[in-house]
Amino acid sequence: MPKHNDLEQKALQIIMNTGNDGLSQSELWRRLGASSREGSRIALKLENKGLIRREKELRDGRWTYRLYPKRLPASIDSIADCPCMMCPESPRCSPTGAVTPQNCEKLTDWLLRITGNECKVLGDS
Ligand code: SF4
Figure 1 (cartoon, helix red, strand yellow):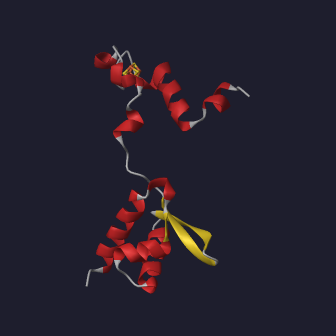
Figure 2: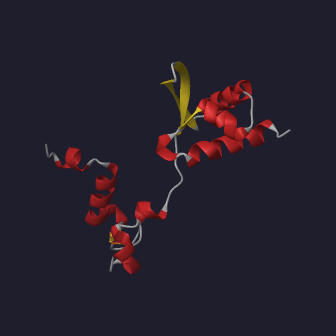
């Protein structure tokens, strides 16, 4: 029988792999080969550790929980269009140099765009 920590780790991996879709608690139990009691305990433990969130969901006329990861693994796609990737200033750019990320308009614009704050900061409506 696997140790509790092993099951928690496996459960977290399964939940993270579902991305933004999440999965039902019962599906997690099935994939873990765990009982409903054990599956619930693991889901609660992961939630208490701040690693997942549980949202109540009505499924086939019964209330259950859907489990979502709080963090997703980073992918290379997430930085593919970062301006630093093709920047001619890149060799001279450093935190303490004449060209710095702290004062870079291109980087700031990109960060605002990917976080969806562009309109708020620029005051567009
Ligand atoms: S922070 Fe700005 S200047 Fe520095 S490499 Fe990135 S885009 Fe270029």
